[in-house]
Image (cartoon, rainbow, N blue to C red; front, side, top):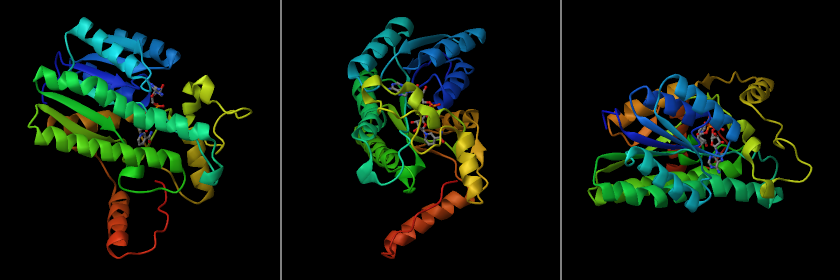
Length: 293
Ligand SMILES: NC(=O)c1ccc[n+]([C@@H]2O[C@H](COP(=O)([O-])OP(=O)(O)OC[C@H]3O[C@@H](n4cnc5c(N)ncnc54)[C@H](O)[C@@H]3O)[C@@H](O)[C@H]2O)c1
């Protein structure tokens, strides 16, 4: 897809971070934006900020763990703007798990699986039939993570597991639209190349009441922001670099313009990790943990 003018883009988790940057980047190219999110404060803010730039936008409360909620957003987008051209299944959280996985709260597993995996499955089920039925050129982008898709970082096993599943789902979705010779294209978006400065480490702000853990405020890991992450890395002598979400949005748009599957920008260090992992498997070596960054 090369022309975004008057195209309708639905962005789940669009009120913050990568989603918010996508909303502005696409809006500035003339797209009509539908933001679906659960964070009322961030939704009010983006509504005001998009309005200030005269970007045509619909900001809807939408919980990706509910297919009904996503179907309602699809209907509203169709009513307001006449259809859907781009979908960004982008909403995601990190539960901030730490320690041994056999001790994790079931609530951490459930919340992360619900948003990161079921959120993508529900988005595919709600939006794909509409994109396919339209027969028009369209694009479905799933936000994954290199952590799970091509490397297994040792620090956040639940998050990594969900993103491994998300990548398998995304690649299969691509195979299916390709096999069907459909007009919809699929891309896998990997925010980066460094840790992206977003609200991901403070996902607890949108944790549902029924999945909150008694007596636990913030992440048990003690990492509640990118700044905390930087400090922790410094203790290990690592200088953590970060990426602004606007850079991710621009990279994603450039890739979509080329109908690229991989919306992925890496550093030489990341490429080394990917090669080392492939070699480790080919040589049947015992895995050793890769470092973040
Ligand atoms: N930040 C990074 O370094 C990084 C790296 C790789 C992948 N990602 C992925 O990027 C995506 C966007 O995250 P981000 O980093 O911009 O974080 P973010 O917290 O800034 O944005 C995530 C958005 O998702 C929303 N959300 C959470 N639960 C939801 C639900 N049930 N329904 C609808 N919306 C919900 C949040 O309110 C928030 O607005 C996620 O899928 C994340 O896993 C981020």
